[in-house]
Image (cartoon, rainbow, N blue to C red; front, side, top):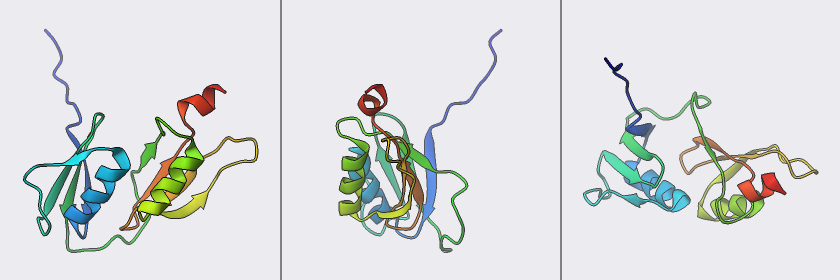
Length: 127
């Protein structure tokens, strides 16, 4: 007899504007919004090769630090190049934990203030 288990279907994030925030994260992750997602919709699904993110519109705003956040690892650029790309998309630098020896990470906030981290790429870790 095999044990019954669960798997993560989506990571769900409360937000003020599901389509706008979904569009931001689709660009960040190289993913795409669901075909039936449109501006003004109360939900938006971002499909990526890894995990899907589901944005749900809620009436209350973000008031405290995230209890859960995403850690991103660049695949085709350095950590610092990725930070610059994300800042150009509208993210803000929330905390800079990069060290002179090249280790560390940067904490950014998305366009609604949700924190996430950018770590070194695999190539930077190996080098």
